[in-house]
Length: 415
Image (cartoon, rainbow, N blue to C red):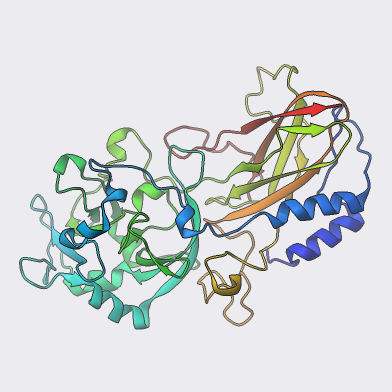
């Protein structure tokens, strides 16, 4: 679906036809539209507070390691190969595998792949794409970013791969302690090729147009699109080539599904905890657009004391209302000059517009204007309908494979 409206145009359209913007009464009966000008102003103010790209210093960083890896003092980074001047990548075979490389890249052989090598390749091979960073077991997104790097296959071919190669294993700096090693893996075919429209696995060195910081995995992190963040190893230093036929990620050993793609799911950004009964208020949120795409975002308001249906755990029979899915923003993020995107893979290179909207593996923002007709305690929930018409949390409601349970927030209406 190609975007047709800017965010400003969407507001104007809503002002005249109130499309997709229900004004909910607590009875959930037929809706009475309140003053559109006032509601447009409320909606416009709420949308103006949204920023599409997460500023680089606002990304959520998981505190892992002892000492904490993301907090290693800057003066110590050079000695452990985590500055642009000292970074190196080794590509070698596993001692437990019969895989063959004609030109292993190792520090021992003085031919490890360096930062300067990466920058030379980036002059002709660098790519950029938009992608969300999301944790398998945390409902809050780590961030939404513009990632730039060189496809891993460009470096992998330098190692002259031969026979018996089915999987690559990735690991980064881990305090030189095997017990703290955190690794991910990927089938070799996903590194060497992608389907039309699919994004390449990259050695990422920029986030939102800036050199990627140490806290965010720099100077070079792996980025594997389409999956949760545990696969995109930070502080990347080693690629091990194996003939293994199965995932051997650290997260897999913790009873996690490491090979399931991103799920489509909605979350709230801002819901007022108190409102005036009878007065309009805005609700905003985001939706992660997973492998199954996104058709709608919906919300449901109910009195807090109203019993939830025991035989309908995913609330499929209640009266959901459509929220407004916002079009592409005019300004994408404060990290970018004037908020403008450079050339990006998911965009038409002539018009500079997204090839589709929403974009798979990214986010959209959504908004709604609501009203509560009388004082009391209420709950609001949100969900997605994917491109196949399937409502969240289906078709994959299981834990340890991406958090997608329906989120609920409390609201108090005062007289």
